[in-house]
Image (tube, rainbow, N blue to C red; front, side, top):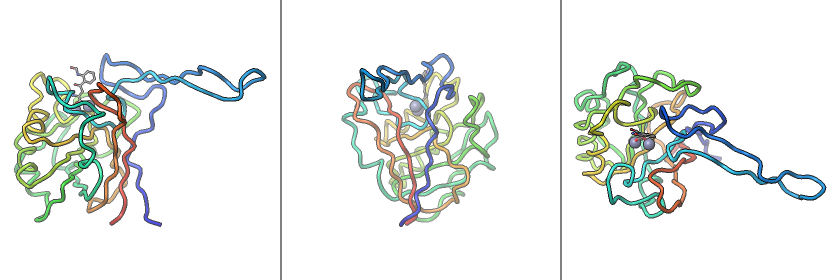
Length: 212
Ligand SMILES: N[C@@H](CC(=O)c1ccccc1NC=O)C(=O)O
Ligand SMILES: [Zn+2]
Ligand SMILES: [Zn+2]
């Protein structure tokens, strides 16, 4: 059997969310008892909870939603690049630093590790980001999906969303909030499908890597 690396956060009560966004909750609607044969619960969550895929609708006014965006970026050959020792907290990954970390042949999906360790228990205020020129470099190399372990490609305080705009210009897809600790950098198969939710600007995903 091919080994599966789970690179997803566990969605759970108390999972850190974007400051001010909806906290996650799982509540029981019906519980097994004399009158009821099943457990059924209800979810309350932000579309950007944990490990998730931004849909174009998140950063463009009439962009595609999670239900209608193409699935092909989310399955296939990927590379995991460790940039964690090249970018400090509060700084951004530059085009020239990324260029040094990329192999000669780059697959269509690139996952970038920016954290030494993804401390998923606490919100990572001041998390590192990715410069829009670095996104352009990936687009020039034919990359269709960019993934990161941070909550956003852009700094938390960004009002211009430059990296997201570069993604939009180049019709790329985005995964955020990955857990890349303990996975050896290199080539893998990525599978991380967004849910088919009409009107959603993002969706949690179960993201996995498989050895190829
Ligand atoms: N830029 C982040 C998310 C984001 O901007 C956000 C997510 C949830 C609630 C508010 C957000 N931004 C508010 O300015 C992202 O791309 O996931
Ligand atoms: Zn997001
Ligand atoms: Zn985003």
